[in-house]
Structures are given as C-alpha cells and as structure tokens.
Image 1 (cartoon, one colour):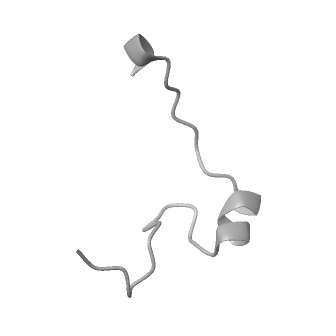
Image 2: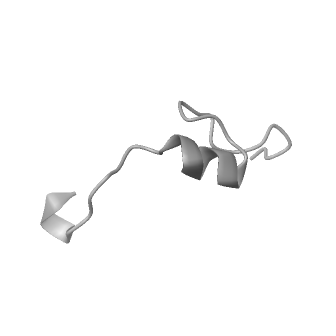
Length: 34
C-alpha cells in the first residue's frame, strides 16, 4: 500500500462510537449482506 500512498490506521474508540461499530470489528452492520 505504500506504493500507492495509502496508510492504514487503527480505529479509535471515539471513531468507533461515532460510526456505531466495535473497535475490533466487524465494521458493517449485521443487516449488510452481499
């Protein structure tokens, strides 16, 4: 990912609370299915 200039960050507790997910995931709600 460095080759294309992308950095991965760890989701903070504040960010997780704001979007309504757990810090460790999953990051999509249960109703989101493929």
